[in-house]
Length: 138
Image (cartoon, rainbow, N blue to C red):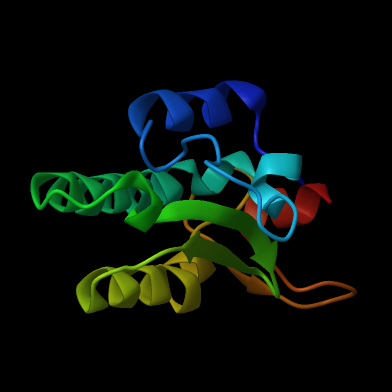
């Protein structure tokens, strides 16, 4: 599942420092640069909140005079084992790391990946988080 292009463009528009183009490529490009957001539209609000927190952290680093290569940058956003995975390259505060961890291990497992309604982790051939309606539609 891949998030709609319009929603991905909105994230890039809202958070230009966090979703900036890579300055240099060390070991190849990041998965995000190749594939974009690899999860459903239902997690947009959750990803938006995490992205906003990362952009705020970058603004604090800018105020401290840190160069762009020291700022955090998105590496990958995807679904794995029914939950959100939000990988960031660069330095993050412990508070932001905890916020990302909470979103991955708890919050995303209660939000339908497809539509954003209240959902739950579903088992079967694949683990996925879905509301009753989306679970029945698949």
